[in-house]
Length: 161
Image 1: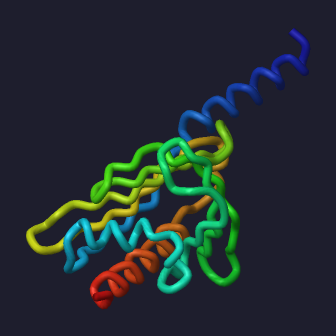
Image 2: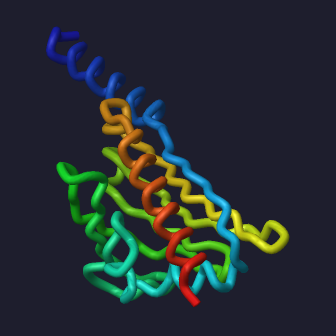
């Protein structure tokens, strides 16, 4: 075999390993003193996001199963991006699941999960990442942004009449 063939096989092997091992996640949860129905109403009223949500703003599309949507995601003042996603599953008052990204490079599976806990609701934002690019990226800033989003949601729900 020629040297170039060995190099090509080596590069392919490295890419395959990076693709398979590229997995990370961001996770944040908070308890809100309200019913899942009240939390869901605020969480899914995208037209009201500009009044309380410092992290996400719906730019295009309608949040319905199967639809393509685009958000402006503000991680912090220096990291603002537009992110497209597909709405995969909606279970009212329980789950909003969206996926997107570039296959093999970096994909995400984003979930808002609402769980009743007595007279309160536990809200979990969880996002799994896969792909080659994950190996070279730290989702800590995204996780911190989801903490800001959850705190803003809590304040909005608990103070809205």
